[in-house]
Length: 373
Image 1 (cartoon, rainbow, N blue to C red):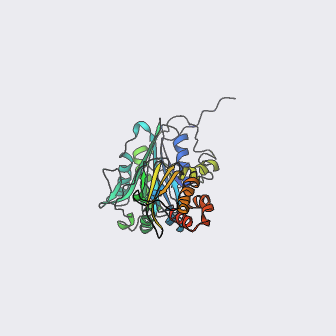
Image 2: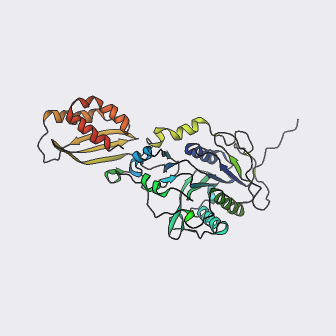
Image 3: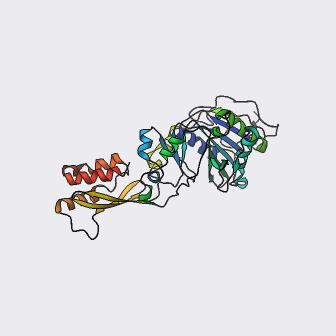
């Protein structure tokens, strides 16, 4: 029997995710980066349920109001690329452009998105010196990047009709000034929705505009609707752009395979795990001042390593008199019990529970636990 030739990949590929699960979508993005043909240009368009996505080296305790996220059912996710914290909801469309590393530049994809808005949505967008897309002096899309040996991607968030009040509420940590961190801080910028500049723009119109501009740059595409937890569910549209020859043999990822874009539960679970979302945080120190009690004035210094308490020191000011024995016992108890706990309220509360029999120790515990929200 003659050998069958390997399938050939199109020069340009476009996928539109039907999932709104941020962990599945981030896992799909990573799968495309790792398993696609290194010569291919790929556009992925996706949306998430309400969530905050922080950069690989960011500190969620410094970037977010974690108590507000829990109260509003906003999930926290951490991506594998750098950059700042961003808020996602269904009024926000994300785009990822994957390419050979040799063709990567920080502005190329942002310029493509700006042209898509100019040419197909009548929105006068431009690219800023920080590689963001802006309209009328306000940012509508931020960017982040990831490079491997052979591949690179540029991804961004496009604010179309996002809940900006919720965005600001989630991205303002009440503890930011008290945290000394090695990670990357976000750079706040005035933001706007595309809906402020065009009543006709929506998720579908933005996807169409970017697909058209992507096709103009890289060749024809037939956008395919995919679910990261299942298999491709069919083409979304006719090919966009002029015909072109496919190039190169198929790599491990075959876009026509039934499981090509399926994300296994383990890949999603890794991105959803506490150890990734919180434990990936670079070392930091949280300094708590203003511990004013009727019986003492105290401050605390809590060092955190990989999301877990490394040390906790609670002490009065240097010029204060020595605390009475029962207060000293409470301070020593915190220093002994808190290290090793996850830096979250529930785990820390469980560690400190043995101290609550003493009134002074209970007040101290409540003060510390309030800073973990």
